[in-house]
Picture 1 (cartoon, rainbow, N blue to C red):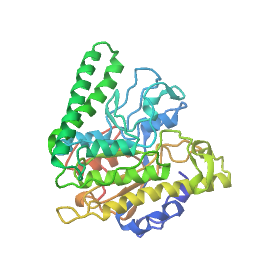
Picture 2 (tube, helix red, strand yellow):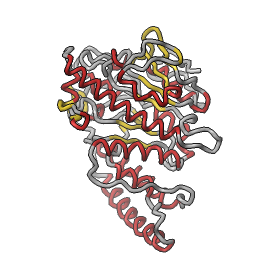
Picture 3 (tube, helix red, strand yellow):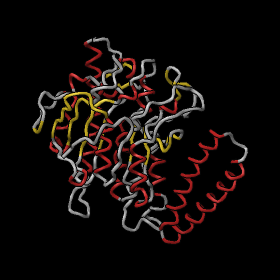
Picture 4 (cartoon, one colour):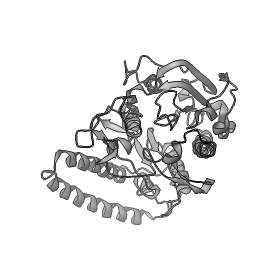
Length: 388
């Protein structure tokens, strides 16, 4: 992110909106900009900042430098939240993205692809795989929700799917004893998804939740991001889950942004070396990314929940990146937005400058505290950030 076009000049309420933050204008009163937050566990004096910063993005733990099976991280803050409140919904959490890839191999200077391709970690050695196809997200969330089916058709479809799942489970159990430790971990993740689908089919949910239209296959990148945003909002509106992570591209992505007039590859552009043309391209990309965030927040703002507050009032929506300036690969003074009020916990609509390097983990402790979850520490935390 080009930070000189990100950080407001004023603190407090009615802060100015630099170029990249201009899309926040309609929702500024519900968005907090936080400056001087650092992910210090990512500051290791070796190459691999993208993988290391992404791996520790939500864990605030220094990841093990390896491209082998001995990956090691912390538990991510979304999974701490899911452990506390996930039993209240069908899906304890939902992990989404736009770019897939296996969590094996070397993706960045000796760091495993597990770090580059995942931000959610259910355990130190277990990244939580994300879904990158909106169609698959829809099918996972709304299996059996087709409102146009008759009761007989719905029951027949349920029996058919259940018989397939029984077969899958039987074959998986047979396979389990023949696998290595790492492969068994991957199979366990797959089996967890199968179990969730079983619960969905047997739950009988769907009467009060109207499924959206099923996304089409082969969406372009812009449409894919929009579809994911819509599905996230619908999942929360239907109370299918209350904890979601969305990873727009893997670490060090070289996606091109021709659709907004930027032809170069993003990662290569981020090594801008002060070139004015390149930095302008990066401002254009950053502004588009904030536009997608603003769209998500506005959709949440437009939904009134049972307590009379909006979904946004009852939520916290966090936005950031694994590094700040791409040229320096810095993990301090990261670009951070926090929308929503967390059920009244957060005094939003401000630019909050910490005045010095503050652990990102302090923000994460505050976010889970808004849920009523009090943890003595997390990652490299030094206390709970005051958001009131």
